[in-house]
Image 1: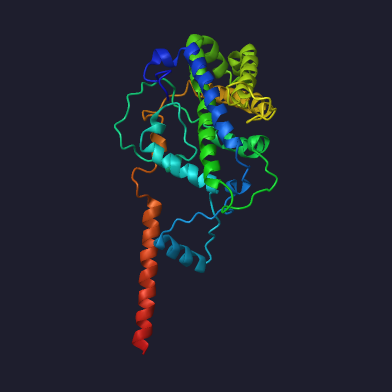
Image 2 (image 1 turned 180 degrees about the horizontal axis):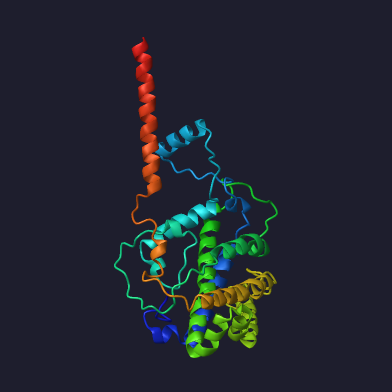
Length: 332
């Protein structure tokens, strides 16, 4: 959330003009973050589980890993380097209330922790729902967008000792979270339109007419304006500027405008529409008394159940080793 639109004020949060202004600001955010990411190579290894070893550095975890391996337990890496980093980042950000804001949705809900700050007073603007498309966002970003925008220096992925894996993943997280916020902001559009034409949308919802809901939400004129505006922004922000402030004569651009326009045309706009339709399909359901983010708080302390299990296994393994050594001594 930023100060251009207060989600603590329902009159602002449901004002379509303010919502559009917020979406336009997010266009700038996404463009700038993509320019930062595009300077680095693709670095495909950081998106493949196991390709980059995450060294936790815990003696207990190393001992447990050895014990599990000895009894044949599958220890195939679950997360890629970027996923591991994103999960750690979301755990930290949750401590300062990021995911209590109704316009934020974590990629890893199981990593969300209880905030250390007192809660903000957000009124119930959105209807309780479980519409989250972060998996689709990450898949498109990694497999379609990045190959189209990342710099190609002609040497491929040279490994973690020669490539900027950390910087690349830092940029990735910024882009992914901005895209997620932009797409899920469609819920506010859907809620605003539902409140302005309640009878029309109620009838479509009762009829399970997803196509009709999509047609009621879509504004083709606005979509064309978005695509034109995105191209202009990428071409403007991505141009080189000479020392005297004049546009450089170089034709090189910092970001592929065609790829960004395609991002919006083929993914952001249609997936936002999907979010809006699925949100509306849940709009008439009886709400749960719990706040929308309550289900995200599966971890409420910095020490998780997994940590306890790891420590327990480590202690048990150590005890077994001590017992074995004692028996050998007694035999002597």
